Length: 68
Image (tube, rainbow, N blue to C red; front, side, top):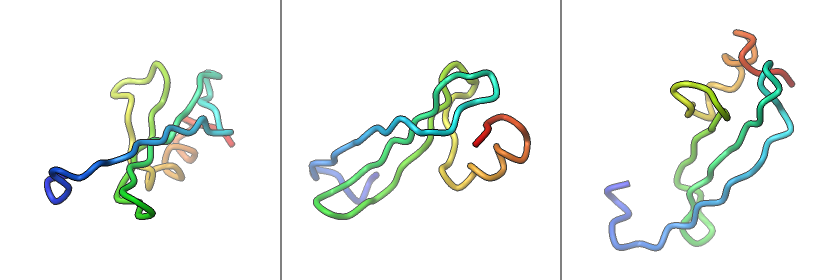
């Protein structure tokens, strides 16, 4: 985030359709400046460590942590 010091960053949180195999919710948090998406992460309710890279979604499905 260092390149964006003094910039106004908007964070939008989306509730995802996918669920954890426990039935708990999943979220995606997207960081945006103007019309540009600059990053994001996923969040699994009640899961430790709780956050994951959005690129890891397929791995989490294959491991059985989340279901489609």
